[in-house]
Structure formats: C-alpha cells, structure tokens
Length: 259
Length: 315
Image 1 (cartoon, rainbow over the protein chains, first blue to last red):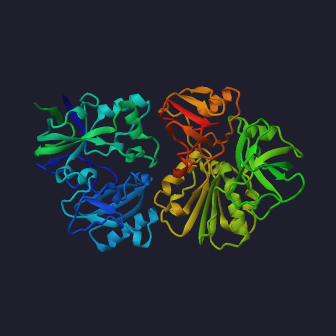
Image 2 (cartoon, each protein chain N blue to C red; image 1 turned 90 degrees about the horizontal axis):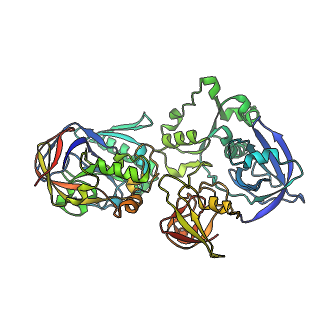
C-alpha cells in the first residue's frame, strides 16, 4: 500500500491541544520529539520526578474524564516552556513554566477549572525523556511508540455513522491517507517507510471515551468507541508503531508498506 | 408525573406581544407546596402535552405560582395551547415544583439571561434584591425593549443598580461581549439561561470556571434520533406487546403514534418526566437526567435507545 502523510502533530502537554509540526526528525526507538513529556498529574498520581514510572492515563487531567480541556486552545513551547491558553479566541492565560511562579500559576488555572482545592491540586509533571503516553504502561518501547491514523478509516467510519467525525478526536502523531480503510489494523509486525524513516506496526489502538469529545466544542457528543464497536465489531482505530530506523518526515511524504 | 395537583388560573397578564404571564392558585385558596428560586413545574397543557415552566415569582410567596409562557408557533403546540386555550378560572393539572437550578449561597453572583431565558433567572434576581445581597449583577440580553419581559421592573430604581440591559437590535445584532466579565474566574456563582446559541457561547466562555460555580437551565437538550441511531424493538411489560422503533423515531413517538399516552415533557432527556423501569435489554442511555446508579434499572424513552435488539420496559 502506498499513501501520503497529511499531518504531523505532537502533544507536548498530555491532554492539551494538538500542535502541528512541519518536520519531524525521528530517531530509532524514540517517539515524536516532546510528545507527551509534560502533564498535569493528579495529586494522588504517585508521580516521582526522580524515579519516573509509567502512569495510567487516569492519573492525569485528561480528556477521558475532562472534556472541557478541549475548550482550551493551548500552545506550549517545550523548549522555552512558555504556555499560552486561549478561550474562544481570547487569551486567558500565559506563563513561563520554567519558573516556579509560572508553574504555580498554571496549576492554579487548572485547579480552579476542575474544582481541585488544597491538597488535591495537580502537579506539573515532567521527567526528561519520560513520556506520559497512554501505552507507556505497556512497556518502555510502547512508551516511545508513535501513533498513526489512517484517514481512510475515519472516512469509512463517517460513512457508517452518517456524520462528520473530526480525525483530531483520535489525537495521533501521524495522519495519512491512501491506504485501504482499516487495512492498517491487519499489519501487526509489518514494516513500512515514511519519508526517510522505517517503522514497524506494534499495536492496534483501542479507543477510549476521550474520543467522544468534539475537539471544537469541548462537548461529549458522540459515543465513538461504542459506534466503532457496533459498526466494525472491534473498538480499534489507528495503530502504534515503533521507529526501527530514524529519518526526516514531512507532510506530503509517502507512507509505503514494505516486504 | 408524581405529586400532581390541580390549580386554578387566577389571572393572566400580557408581558410582551409573544409572552404572557399566568398565575396559579389552589382552588380552595390554601398554600401551595414551597419552592426555591429557579424551580420549575410541569404543566399539563389543555391540548394534552406536558411542558416545563420556571416559576418566576418570589419563593417567599406560598399561595401562588407564576409562570411566563412564550408563544412558539413553530413548536409542538404546548405553549400555543397555553396562550389560546386557557382563561382565568380554568383548572389545570401541574406537578409539584422541581428545584433544578439549586440556589447556592455565594459572596457574588453573575446572572445572565437571553430573551425568555429570563424566566428561571428573574426569581433569583428578585431573591438577591429582597435579601439585600451586596454583590450581584444581571446581564439581560434581548432583541429589543418591546420583546423584553420584566424590563420595567429590572430598570426601576434600586433594581437597575444591579442590571445591565443589552438590546441586540440597537447594536446591529451584536451580542453583548461577555468575555471581559468571564475572563477571570473568581468567587462569583454564575446562573444563566437563554437560547441555544447563547447557552453554547457561555459554555465555551466559562470552560475554565469550576463547575461548582456554574448553574444553567437548558430547555433545549439532546435529541433521540441522531444519525447514529438504528431501529430496535420495545416490549411493553404489562401486555407483552412488541413495538418496532425505527431509526428516526423515539420510543415516545412510536407509542404516541400507536394511540398510547406515554408521559413525556421535554422530549430531550432533560426533565425526567418520562422515566420508566428498565426490565431487560441493553440500554443506550442518551438522557442527561439519570444518575450512574439509576442507569441499571431506569430508562428515559424520550431520547434513549437500545444496543440490544430488544428492550423490555415497564411503560
């Protein structure tokens, strides 16, 4: 199968807005640069900055429980750690999260938003190369897997349910088209190339209630996991892949199944 | 409808060309069940429908309920019936008050009403004015002065100190800019109600506010026949009769077509009137009413559907 990369995204802060990338320099065994390396962990998450351990997604402020996060348009520069939050086009917050004051202000913003008072205030979590990906609890390799969505599968799903489905509900790193709908799900252990990199499909992506949230309105408006299950007999949309060989990837590059 | 009671229409008053106020009292003049500001009642309209209306009078008045009804010519006929088929002296059947808004003690309040959305808000406003609360503000947005119920009261001396009026017809249709007052969450509790566009705008602009401080009354709700609906069957427990529910009809619709009279009000899964016991089958709960612990045994047939081929309901 021969398709094209349409969009590349990373999510520097887990649960917050997707940030488009015009180029990614993938490294062997690594995920997308700065993908989910920051997060607002729940007070009782057990996160320890000195001994970072993979944490289940319910230990973070994420969309699965908190659809209102989608109502924020966040922009975070992982290098300078400047965070800006916009609401309906208006700037609602900005701070530098490399300072204690900035972190405190951001924690206050989310504490207010989610009624987390006193001891239940969240913690701004980050620990070097550690990633808070949903599948980080599976293995170190999975923690560094990249996520892909075949836009043809999303279109097929749209046809079945008879309504628009924003592919951004699925919060993937790589969006591509040109492969047959849901063909990617049958390619476990198969290798493919994108741009100058070579990857291997390692896992199907089981969808959760985070996909019920419309990324534009911040409302839970569609039972996506149930609908996928009803129409296709499984709850999967997209796959995870491991980077076997590094290389530069850009939108427009082809994605080719190997072997 | 539980706790129903008969009331007499004591008076009717025209508030605007489209909105009339109706006052209910007990036929024997006795006190009515008490209510909190923001509460609503379900009224059985003369044409046989059930409609939710906010009580607009002050909660200290225990001898009467007052509602304001907007005539909706394009609606399902409930409000039209209230406008054209009721007169002082008529007896209507209503529910006891349902305290859905939940008045919360707070150091500050922001009330936002759009058009007929003033009805659940006005009683909160009157209460705050009556108790002399030091810090509250009502933002009231309507098309024009002529279409604004309670405008005179809200712009009277004293009340007007707490009121901001915005008429879109005087501003080239531009809506009041709420962002400056909503940007920074603080001690305020926000109560709001209005047309869907306003409800959506306020939801979006208060997305960063704690939910504990946000109170809204949404009579618009969700729909039973979205695109992800498919046909299924409903078995009526009492008779064993089985009904086919097509993809584009709700259970309540089908029962109504069959000449039955299922209890129903909002038809959008928001009021709780149509609640029935769920006996068998896998429910697709689509309402906004049932709590997690009720979903095993109850079901809202106005919007909810089935994942299984068949449901058995005590309907």
